[in-house]
Length: 340
Image (cartoon, rainbow, N blue to C red; front, side):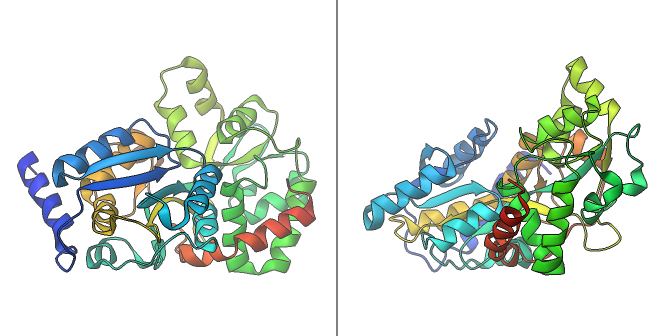
């Protein structure tokens, strides 16, 4: 498709659901917990397409939520962007989001990846990485298998209190119920090669080094290593194997980046337009090519070689709102199990 046609298509998308709104606001205030350099182009192109100036404040999730609460009805923030269903759930519990309606978003974003108050605009998968010299591939085809006593002393993860693991735990609660997930969490803790520490890339490196046999990590961390030109990163990739978990059952757990319009947003028209823009083909491609994430919109073609090399997989389609609703239960389970 020619560039002109793409621009016309995006403009048509942005305007379709705003017909019932008043004249669009000319300014948008975004509070963002995403800190990816490639998102710069996202904001710039939104301004070029709409004429709406974007003002941003970037900080950690807890800092932004505390700021929004302290600002109250006087908050200038229109949209909150953050990563992970557990963090979006926390914002929802605090009552900072406002419901919004958009026929465009309902058409483009699958129902299981949105709620009445926020939407996922990109996805990443929670995958299993293992060292083939220490663990057989058939031993680690599911999340549930990581609690098998045969893997005692071989499992590495980051902290159980981290949102990535809490969301996975919440998804398992949806599938199996709290009692079974508590048994699973106890099994995971019993199988630790070491106490949880570090980020997801650290888990992959530990598997490659033989410090542990298997680990859980978000897919985009593995894709970053695949895209790296550093010899040490390529050695890590060559030393490990990659599994899409639960392909014969529930599908691989999907994590998200998401956004919602804030309750006291002064520029609600601009906020809805921005949320719609996040579902445009152009924005979806930014997320895929810039941070190794998958589009939420079906049929969007990306040019990310690492994602293509990882291949296709069956994703868990449990409604993201239901997963978010089980995060608190997952936290209690992990705490009782000593998974911290």
